[in-house]
Amino acid sequence: MKQSPIMDKIQQNMQPGVITLEGFLGKDERNLIDILEEDDAEVKRLGYTHEAIADRMVELKEAGKKGLGEFTTVEPHFEVRVDSVRGKLPSPFGGPGLYSKTNTTVRNKNLNREITYTDLNIHLIRKHGFYEGKGFPFRMEPKELIKILEIEPVDTTPQIGV
Image (tube, rainbow, N blue to C red; front, top):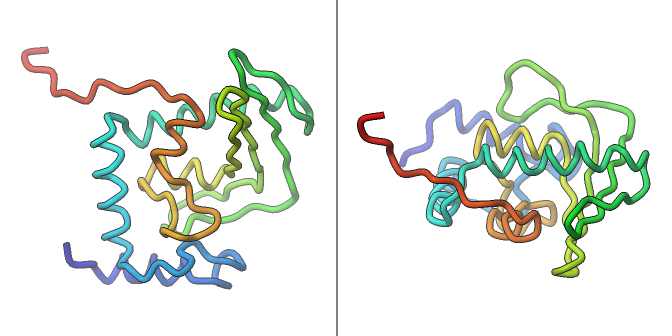
């Protein structure tokens, strides 16, 4: 799909030094629309929705807040730590709202793997299906998020006659 001028502007907002020091794309030189379409297709192919992924991220973040900045056990086999620093960030997509600089680290003890995400990551995934650029150190790979956070598949088949 051809990228619109609006998407060009959003992609400019994602460059290093505009909103964050590192930006959001890393060395990924694809058009933003191509990044979004590829990730959307991957999430759907795996049988999930961006909303389900974001919901699980929020669920674990909320459970981790009980640890007051220390790792806390979340059943069945997670450890979660939530850290906040001062300040807020806007979405590179624009719109109202600022997102707290809150980092949530989730350790899956069964897999011996962990992932860290922010409140802005949750917003970008839920509202825009954006996981950041390929090869970027802070990219959230949909398949990895699903695996580490143990997200249940969503029934995405259309309901006829309901």
